[in-house]
Image (tube, rainbow, N blue to C red; front, side, top):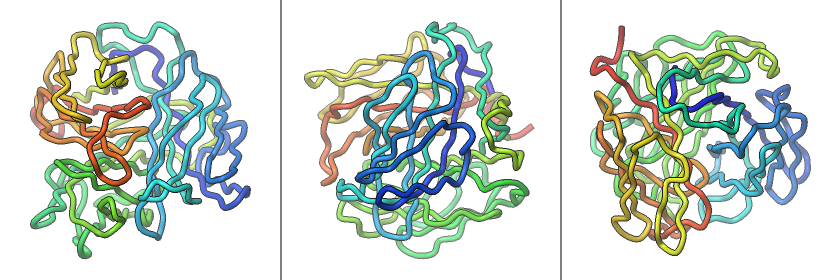
Length: 329
């Protein structure tokens, strides 16, 4: 998978804990240490980045609600804050995915660079239409969707995983403040539940990202290019910072633009349009995507109460798009 940035490296982690006791599930060898205090995981990757990484998190629990935010982001460590849907500290199982760089020169202005992961894996993405009649909006030949009830969905892969379980992330789509929780992960399926700001189940559309290990060896010294299952994939990382109500693109593909279209609402127009709607993952904020198209997306940022608001910390975006209108080879 190609990107315009130099030395992009992902270091996935699934971790859980209670009190000060940490249980590692995935990628223990890629981190020198992970400690827990007051529902905050302090994570130290084995290899430091050259600039602070872009960070994506996903709550996974059997209870309602759940959000992961980040703080104290440095080149060699970061804190992952495990929160309830209402924004209070809450011990949880979380998925964490930092994407960092192996060089301080981050932009090459051309798609000549590979995205690497700390262990071999491939990316499987879906857009779930959870409102109305539940359906897979795309990539439907790769999975089957089951509607289990209000805000409760199971995605069953047509080709099961023979190695370790995937790390799963998601972002709601539409004019909604809904949050996602990954409630269960198995070798063939993933169960996702969506909640409103009051932690009540609610139907929602969403993007689902599955980083699926292609090896059972997950110890961080087996770095390999990130693979994908769709045609002519293009991978971009974007950082939005908002100061005094004004959004700026701190990092973005050359020529990409941002327009402030309201409190907590930002329209991003891609410098080079995709051939079809991309998948978008939002990190470090309670924020969702609306009005997605091949040329632009709208980012909406919310408070824990579900009100639109300008954020005080960066919004990270992972944009996974395609330069071919057809999904498969």
